[in-house]
Length: 99
Image 1 (cartoon, rainbow, N blue to C red):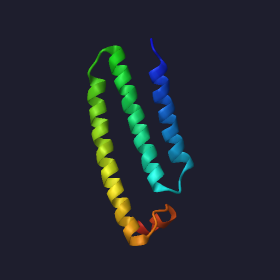
Image 2 (image 1 turned 90 degrees about the vertical axis):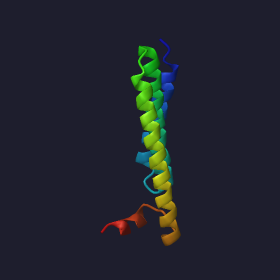
Image 3 (image 1 turned 90 degrees about the horizontal axis):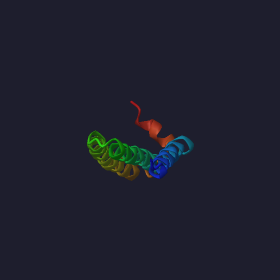
């Protein structure tokens, strides 16, 4: 069995988790790290789907990519609107959004 692709997927997943954990200041980088995690998981789903010869992993990948695209578009729109109002998108300034 070929483990190269599994290693690549796991490395991408670890990089995404480290991006979220280590970078708590910049929301754009946190959003990109979440996208990287979603893409790594979908990559692993595709690889496992091919190995076990089942289409379910490919269906899950389509669902994950749909959710990732929607999350990216909505998150970026919120960040742009917030940046226009406040002039910054730092995590410390987001405490003002709490009601």
